[in-house]
Length: 96
Image (cartoon, rainbow, N blue to C red; front, side, top):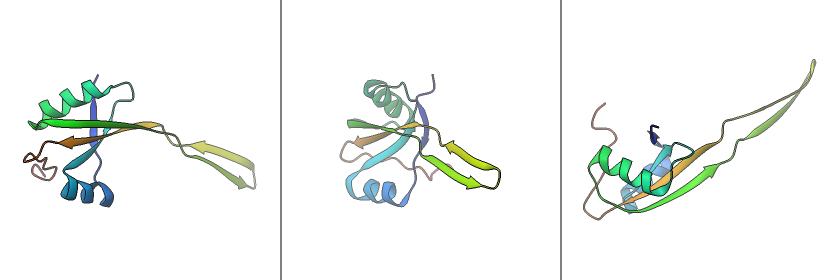
């Protein structure tokens, strides 16, 4: 099971990373906080102080068309917010 799927790089995530040394990742839906902590420490070589997780629900949409009502939804996913120890940092842009 690959625990870390991808880092989340949005304006809000980048701002809290610069200000509070907190980074966000999309993680496997069945991963727990201990597994996430070990995976981030192994992947980026930093020490983790705190891990918070959020299950993101799917967004549901309904469209009314000529052929009838069409419904759809996005996938549910899990987000991990990881606080890195003071002095450590993660650089997502180093290997571009």
